[in-house]
Length: 319
Image 1 (spheres, rainbow, N blue to C red):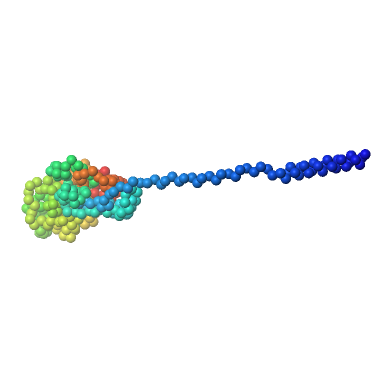
Image 2 (cartoon, helix red, strand yellow; image 1 turned 180 degrees about the vertical axis):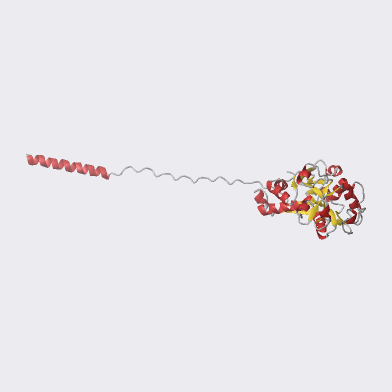
């Protein structure tokens, strides 16, 4: 009997083991393979609508303002190189800021005849010029300038006087006072060499208005094509005198001496407060709305960088 029970237990255990093995060998139901996600559709790159521009911007006119605009143009080209670096919508063409000088009178006329985009002046714009430029007339004031009555620093006059009155200036430039010893007997009997801008320059008009007031300038006066050339003539000649612009004078402090005029020094403070009378604005004008490239460059002129370049050129920034 005991043998029978034992045999039955063995059979039961074997059956259980077979059942468990069968259960363990039954594979689990596999999950359905994951559906591969469709690749994300990339958003199309934003397109920039192209803007048509003329890659060249042309300034013409004042020889006093020309070096300032040219310096700012050079800095703009160095910083950006091509127009697309200024604005991705602009074409990838080299920036070209063209600057030509021929005197303030050429500024408005070059805009009128379409040979320049902007006209530069180193004087106030005449009412007749504003009228001719029409309803689209706009001016952009860049700097304040003045005309200094300057002589060569080696001239002995610098040791005995630092002030000169308007009447004496007028007589010197008219040729009524022709020798240095006529100003002071202690000076040498040397001819006074008068240097002026050519009559198309803004400086000539400013000097006429503030000093000469109708008195003709001596026919012996040497006319210079630019303010830089005028200053160079004074530097070259120990006995020369001329009305060097404040900006040019500031760049030649080692070689030029500027007189006070009627007791007022041609300093930045006195020019700005108006006490130094022989002064003028430096500006440029146009007669139409600006295109996108012109607007970008004009903004650059009136940026901190532009202001620094105006000052580096010896002028007093007007912004």
